Image 1 (cartoon, rainbow, N blue to C red):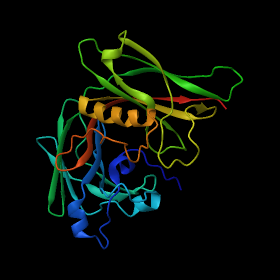
Image 2: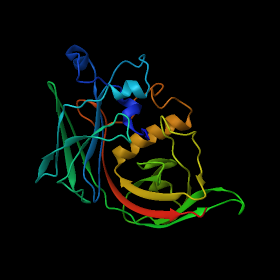
Image 3: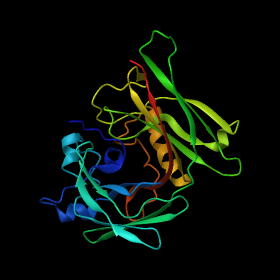
Length: 282
């Protein structure tokens, strides 16, 4: 059974389970949120409460630390829904709150309200307009190699301020999209409206196999170009900097990751999205 974890479930997370839950401990800890809503998709939220950084953290610890009894409400200003909890064995911890009524739409603002014990946590995000991913190709340095990299191309809208994230997923190996290494982009740095770049695989925490930044012959690769706002960009840039600087992504060395959560920590993000697939030859 695959067990992968990517975002805050490990970055900031480390929580306490409701079975035999110590209320005093819960009141002293912070609620940690990893939530998102993409254009054309429903909201999803992973919830935890923080524990001291001195505690040992592994997959079993995280499994017992998820918050599973919160009330989470998402609203677009006109309609709202209460998310339901389900088990997802492709994640650690294997619990996720999900929506099924409010479909993400570009340009709309989505508010998040979390009620747990005697606390209320809130946040707000907007889904930016999607930017089309025009091309994604698999390229090898030498024809006889069995590994290679992905190159993508898209056009950055001239009159818009945009922040991007590139993510990839290998079919049958990764059940979720993984942010690419150096995949957070600010269009202030672009030299042209036509953006062409190499995409390296991102870093997983608790990966099933040893990390490799490249792709392999025979992979069915999905590549996603996300648009996001400045707050989400700042969060993912902090995450990226922790990894690039060789720090431990589980416990950032001296600073917390950027957050837009009021009453807690973490991220509630809206994303535009465009996806292409590449079937590489064996």
